[in-house]
Amino acid sequence: MSIKIKGYLFTGPLPIEKTSRPANKAETVFAVVQKAGPSFDPSFWLLDLDRTGAAGVVFAQHPRAASWRATEGAPAGIYLLDTTTQPEAAADLDKVVAEILASYTPPAVLK
Image 1 (cartoon, rainbow, N blue to C red):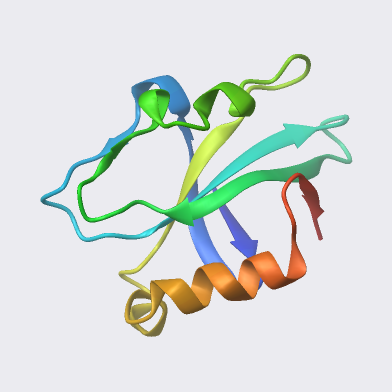
Image 2 (tube, rainbow, N blue to C red):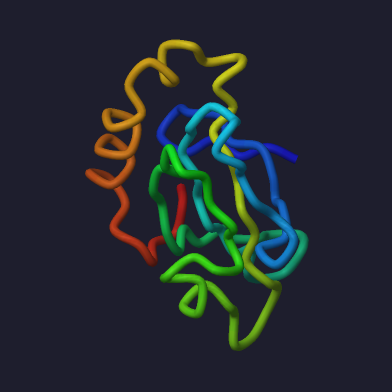
């Protein structure tokens, strides 16, 4: 499944506990998103958004991972910016992060 955030395509959800982005992979942007509400009319909550970093990341060990764990409802998942189909986004990851955060201050409902 994919999700569009501010016109950018993210792929996921990937489980927080089992997902990492090694340092030898190109850096990208990640979004932590939780699906809520009934299946016929769900809402999607942006819980966090950032770059993966040049050193890579193990999402379960991320400094903010504790705040991503849902107390109720569906578990949050990791969505990664699809840079293969959006090379212009890959060229300026800081711009992608800034554009999204200008519209959504986590936690925020994605529209």
